[in-house]
Image (cartoon, rainbow, N blue to C red; front, top):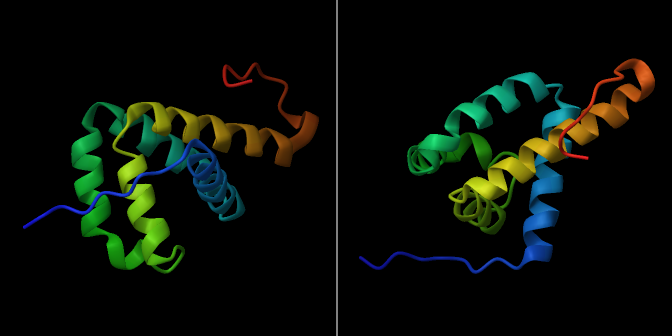
Amino acid sequence: MAEIRFEISEERKTFLINKIAQKVVDLRLSPVAIVFLESSKPLTFLGNQLMIFMQPFYRAFFSYQEYEEIATMLEDRNNIEKLICAIENLEEERHGDKRAKKNPCN
């Protein structure tokens, strides 16, 4: 069986990363998401397989095409790091000056 792959432009990757980060921050799941993403970096392939297993849950938030693009995009560890940075940046914006810590993503 042939595997379908989506080619994702950098602009589209940025859009999807920001969309995911915004959902995570809106749901106030930033700490959990960051721990999960950090721990899954060495296991990107297994993380991708977990996304396939959890597809019914994710489909509540994303269209089929977005979901497939996200699954493909998150196979790359660099994109996971970009997502973590986007979540941290949105959290800092949400809390304003309450958190005066150095963010390595800035």
